[in-house]
Length: 103
Image 1 (tube, rainbow, N blue to C red):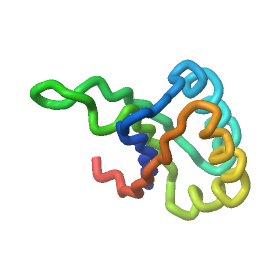
Image 2: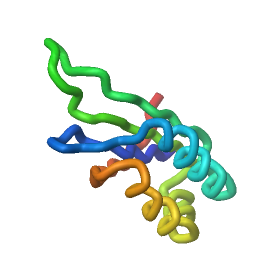
Image 3: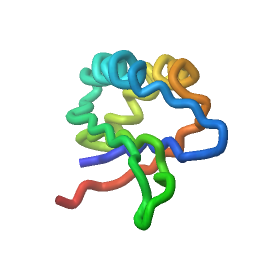
Image 4: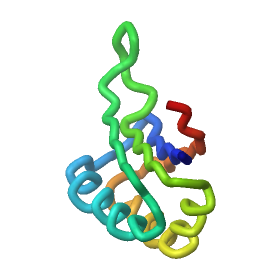
């Protein structure tokens, strides 16, 4: 399995609308990318760091696909829609990481 992690780092003067993200953006991604194999979308909300302090990331979404090529097809078809929606809920530029699911 191929996992795409979309991470929104905690920065000064950041804004993140979790209500919009969870009620609009994530359902939109699910609806557009299901046909391309997205199997699971897990969203994490950062709550803190060890010893206190701010979390390194305000939010992290893990999207699971059967393969990297399935993800690439989803992005080719609907990437502009998904990426174009980001300014509606945050001013943070997300970081992406690609991973192989081992367990």
